[in-house]
Image 1 (cartoon, rainbow, N blue to C red):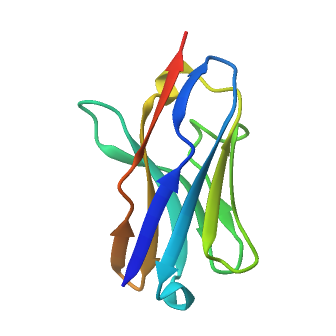
Image 2: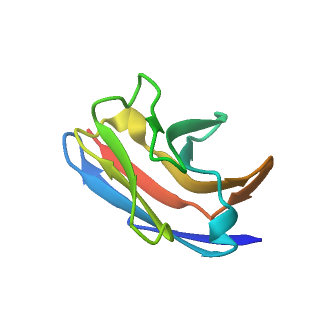
Length: 115
């Protein structure tokens, strides 16, 4: 089991930056992949950023060059640095950890970007 707690969401103007944090506890040594997803009202939950156990990262085109995912050395924190934010980035952001095929989710943190 893995427990995930997000923080760092809030209200920001377009063009601004936010840094989301996710604290992981439990069986963190078994985590294969950590990621951030987001879900806007009425839309599906979409992948925003992913980092594998070897440090390889992946981003969809919608955030590439603006968002950066990282972890600390202990691998119990994962961060999402979001720059040049746009109103369309407004969503609830969820931290995700994958152990083999089992996903674990945080409770989500709201990010609102005003125009």
